[in-house]
Image (cartoon, one colour):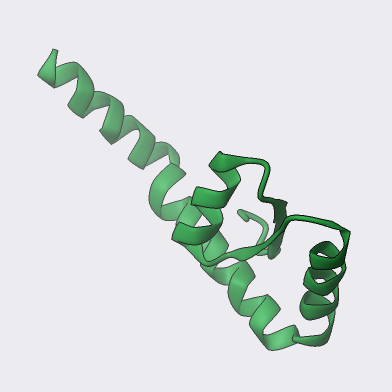
Length: 80
């Protein structure tokens, strides 16, 4: 996601499902057929693939930049 690349992830990973849903930065697959459809979609829809990549990068920056992680940890420590 941070590289502006759309993600094609397995529904077998609850963590990836959440990140993809929140970021709108990729697609999910559950079997070979849906994997193939996802690859074809990404290859045939350049603009939407670019948009997914941008949304994914923005999500990572918003939620996982060093500054944001530091601020979240600081808030937790202050509560303790």
